[in-house]
Image 1 (cartoon, rainbow, N blue to C red):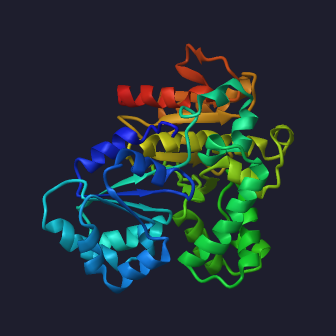
Image 2: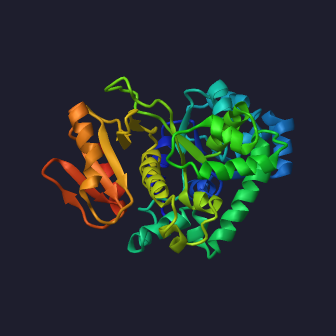
Length: 391
């Protein structure tokens, strides 16, 4: 098993809460991690139809049989269990009584919020981080973007394009139907590919609806499905307005760039080098690395972007400490003066001096104007630095 950065957080949560929920996309390593850390627990996979039927028809008897110290894998498949779990855990003060995993955050959240509030700790486990597969830093960044970070691609030998093709087919035919009974799977598949073409762009529901051949209300519903199953996420605009002409529409990103590349029909890292969306995918890759690092600590996202109506933009705003940190993301491998214009405008507008550039090259700089220049290879180290300083 590849050692995971979230291990310490998961142990800590299990020592504090009666129930721990580990959510994340399929194949992100949730089951592997919890079974490794809690090997002495009874493991119950609710994908198994016989066990699921037992849990649905007799939840009280099911929980009495398996008792405490149990892992309930894909727990969202039996939502009726949650109210019975509440009764079970309230009878005992022991922490870590149950470990739940699920690849659908919406269903888990919906049921947990009703039944288990205050009794449960959350960990969102996304695919691997660059720190967990450091061998990628010895290769061009395009290889990391194209391959993505799902653990099976590093545990075994797969044809990458074929693996993602199977992943997408399984997701659409199985998970999507589990969340919502969609009859037009062809339209949903087309919509999924269209979202990949909008990485790093402002979300326009109307245009997506037109191109997908459905109405805007359906698009909003389908986006909710993609978000709840950890395929895409919306990066919100920074809430503090420094002038009245700021954009208030979120931007769209994928949790994993390998999956996005597959949906864009990119078949190799060499093809990615000249692809028109290379810059968008690099930006997505960097922001996802920031997000994975945050989630691995058991914390919520504190990331935003900022843009005004005249075209000034900051790719990533980190809200932490006394002032936000502004980060520009540049896919170029050579540092140029153009890299610094957005951050210079930001400093004049806000007075904030905490600024950095993450770019596609290897060299790093600490410039006299307090702007840090960081290689894509060292995102995690930079985030640790600003967290330690409280900035």
